Length: 278
Image 1 (cartoon, rainbow, N blue to C red):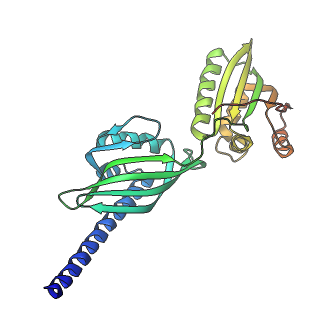
Image 2: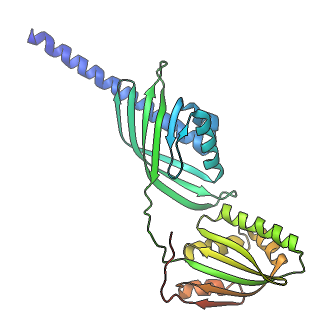
Image 3: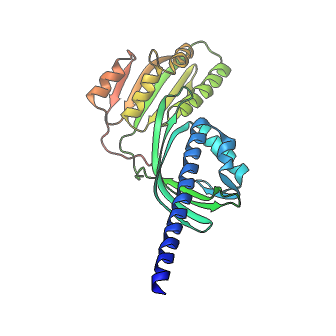
């Protein structure tokens, strides 16, 4: 009897292992399709990889339930510049019609012109559900960034720019200021804030906040000749005359030389002590 049972048991275990490997490969193939759809902006394709009652749990927002809501959320995410997504599976386990998929992701955030302005990497867990036709669809999906969070940003740089308006009406200044700060918001992920203030007759004060010197250099490169915001900066200089730029924060000599290269009136105020909350 034992001689008969052992071969049967071996065949059964081998068959189960092969079936499991086949299902795991199907899930890996679905992940490849997700990456392809995401990077090409194919929202219908992305939605088709989720079950109708799927639940997605992105960081910092509420549950996203159902393929239509998921499609809308992904649309917003992609339109904000996310792309070049990469998945790396770490562990996939299949049990009947349910499977879990643990892995990591990487992506880039790009400006409308295709310039990389930020990056993210993190981890995910997906619960997959096998359908009656044999396909695997996402049932639950959660992920979060692995970029460390710190309470304080000790590298923030603040620019206070005192300006005159160039014979422009209040309405023209208001309209252009709104346009310009929205443009910065979309193209410079590490620009923490851009605010225009009326500071007197024909006077405007602009306060620019950057995460660090590197973030400010991104802005400087963008407005330089050949940069993605060159034309917008030319329009900026048509609306304003810069009287003085005061730079607050810990700055290196190399950074000071970079700023002085713009040939604008500037002075630097070094940091003695302080903090900026994130």
